[in-house]
Length: 577
Ligand code: SF4
Image 1 (tube, protein in one colour):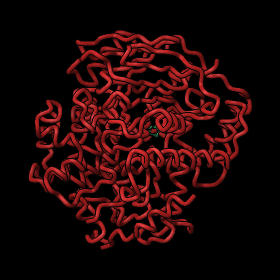
Image 2: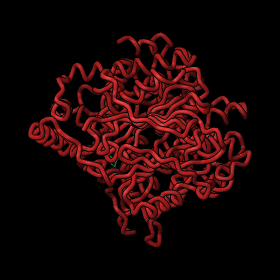
Image 3: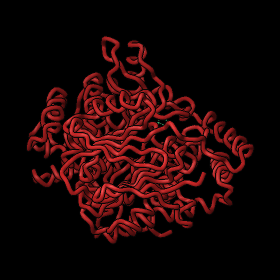
Image 4: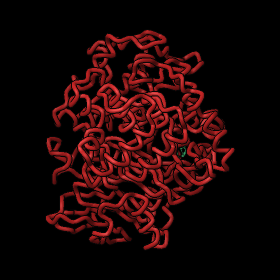
């Protein structure tokens, strides 16, 4: 089976199936989406206008039996940052697209009529179905309707009311194997889907075939070696499954790098209520699940099922960054209240980091008080969901709130909010926030384990030395990982030694009969970063956009009392490769 590009034109309500150009055949995931966005999207276009495109592409190893390979990338020009965006997600979409032989689904144009559509993708066909009955409905309603309509045999991607309203904090939500939701988060790609008047995309799994492997035996051998590296790494075998990503609460708080009360201090007094240990204990008491995979074949299982006090399902995929944003940054102590807000944000399809970061900043604007979980819930449920003026302000993200209220202490880069790691106390992640083409994004180059490691090659988080090279290496590695559909945590065993990297190269070669080497794969990672940077430059961004907010240069963060002290020249060194 030769993979094809499915290209949808919303202007004409038409589609065509194309061969994959020779030069794109070795690309997958982020490599594919960023290449297509850079070559087909006018960098100067309005992100919500007719010339932006949505490019969905599974990773090179998605659909295979390789563990943790079920991530799907999505690329477009971001309405939040004005820059290129790649976002990736688990769920069921990557496996189904790969098994249908879809290398990528590219959506372009805007319909002539003001109507919302469902796109139903099947083998060799795309149907355009008007869905007036789904307009104004949120994700779980849409998801349940589609599961009922297709008897569970579909992947579903949808937007809720904020996406319809084109809020720049809107995500695209994706069905997971249990019929719950995951998100293409950060950067407002839900608003792009809303601009194209697509309420949901369903992909039929009925006629798919297992993906073909050029050399099944070699694939099996390499896959076994790769799985062993995950099983032998502490983070992927023990840390993440025990406490989820919330295990980071105590680690980052202990490092004095957990931004609290809008980046005033690097520690929170709420840690004991918010930490992974408390989360795991609470889940166990209520018969939830401390381990859970966001896609089939995940053996790390950092996700969980969190029940309420009555043992009823409340949320899953309850991430450290969400707990940080609402718990430390906005100061809510009650994990149940944050879980309730998390579930609401899933249903509304809004980015939990951006919304939490904006609400924490909103304290400085006098719109909410620290720790007021009831008010936070109310703003999301009754303002953002309904699109009131306050809802539009908070739903516009922290950068926009800061401009509207004349605030100076606004922790954004390229208008995207910083997540849960203060760059004054972990300087490697600051270089990532500054330089990644994505805007402040920890996943683009997660230096934190290297900065906080106890190993000899640790890069001291409080000093400048070694941070630029560290962030560069990790960002290149992440571009590689994002291209093959692997979960970002696979980056952890990649730190341990060459085994994981070599096994992954062998798997890619066994899948495609290719001649990839570690070096050629690294070169691909570098090319992806440079392609993204070049798009941003053509979109009008300059090196001046690769900077952290000025207040971090003169406001030391306790307990280390360090400031962000990199010069512009030192930051720009990042791109010398
Ligand atoms: S480790 Fe976590 S993020 Fe990665 S695939 Fe599993 S559940 Fe998803």
